[in-house]
Image (cartoon, rainbow, N blue to C red; front, side, top):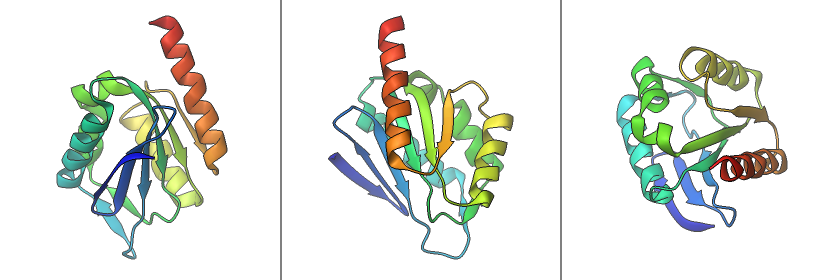
Length: 138
């Protein structure tokens, strides 16, 4: 893990494969991801990527909540993130979070390649494959 940064309930880092990792832990019963948090997250991701497109692994095991429409739009449509986001791998362990991510991807961001899975190994493999495809096409 390189350059670990913590913002609220989230921990961000860039791993040895140049994959951005986000581990989100909600300590509350129900968390609403809002626009203020979304802006902070994008800033941290931009700092970690340092202008280089990367795959993202988002670990939402243990997350209980939702996102505001403004936050979802901001994350999906951010021109900065669009330039940096190769793919997304969501690690989930609940049907509620799986439905939340499926809705987000369908409504707000249907273009970014993504996978939902329940383990880090699958997420890493998917991310590495997408980085290799991106590098091959670049």
